[in-house]
Image 1 (cartoon, rainbow, N blue to C red):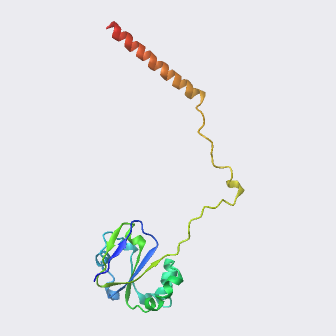
Image 2: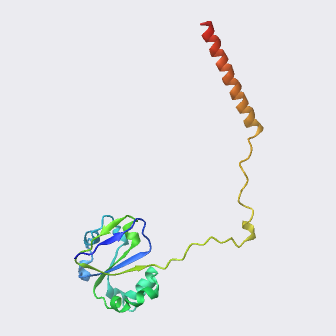
Image 3: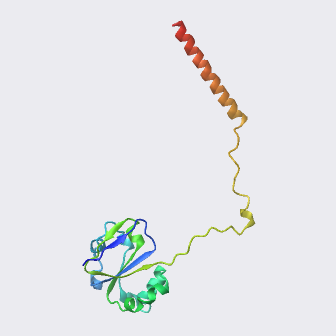
Length: 173
């Protein structure tokens, strides 16, 4: 049975980790888009590396510190993540470019887990500085100047005169 992963349009903050059957020598030239069955993929955003390169840190700590995954999410998977050997593929949402698609990963990839970055909600608090007060123009649009009004009156007068001349020429003709 093949794994299907539904990606929603505009997905952000999701990180998927795949174990691979690749060796360090096979990293260069690996076609991640084909192995993932992705329609749209930014290869420069896909992380494919040997876990041994994380010596002293470990994959769990890398996901926590490098991708902002909360420790509570990683707790149940820590032993499995840190037990991975050889090459892993880390797929952040940004690699999929916000495009809705269905991934169908196949050998040499195996989905290990899907994690969600810890994001702080956006808050719109008042600015602390008094200097920021009174700077936004909340008044209605300024009334037209006298020159603008005079120009509009002159335009209407010219149009009326042009209409009168046209009527006189039509009557005379």
